[in-house]
Image (cartoon, rainbow, N blue to C red; front, top):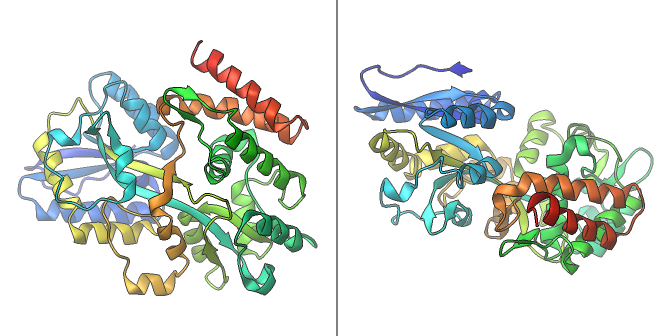
Length: 392
């Protein structure tokens, strides 16, 4: 654990654990952003605690279970909804009145049973990145049939029309890519406390996922790191991904020309990767936590945070700087999908999402590789979800 100490020892100090602090590039910028809060305060200071993303949940949950842990935690959506039913977090509503702020659409996902449990710290929207050089007339497809035709036309001579994940070693990314198809075809993984893995909309989504897989338009077996590199090398025509990936392309290949457009699915709903600022129920430093929230939600800190996070949204509605839009015009396509974003969670069964991931991905692979029908494998997935996950 790397702990940065750049605060006055006389101040009441809150620890703030986040995988973001451990990231190359964004980590240093975020610590500098936090230090602006420290310099603005006479009574309080934030101590950033850098824990890698892969270790954060295990580390923090263990500490919380022992009655300790950091005061503030930047949780991803899955870990956040695991912490809520366990009573590990205290509601922000109990700290201060936030009615004066104009929050982004993702704000509704931090409210549980009428209580605001956290603050949406970063929201990454999804859209379709494309290489104009590999598409007819350089324009993106407007619907799913046109997308399939464009993917076929762009495939050949070492190039592929599309890329997505379809392997268990990348189960989380596989789940994200599947979920975008499910949301895009009007489906949900669950609702009203019940799994809906065998609904007509989900079966249609898996059918279309398999259709693309069977067309031979994707580099089968390639992991995300590989096909993203292939993209900026000009070998992939289209990819539905989050805005952070556009930032990777810009950083890795500054001269590479690409753009972004809405995903080609019938419905606009797409997934979001959502991280929340949450407050440890073990912490006694509620006044200091309230001071940090008040500071971070002001327009200037929000604008600075949004700029350092790249194509992501922050908690409140902050317009992007003209300079940023001129440099990264593709960001607009991701921002336009902000009202339609939905976390990659099983609605109404959020805390069991990881279990659903396993069941769904196992069964979809039977369809992709084993050749079984989408209807059969999703019927099996529904039955397994009821017996293995919900114990019915």
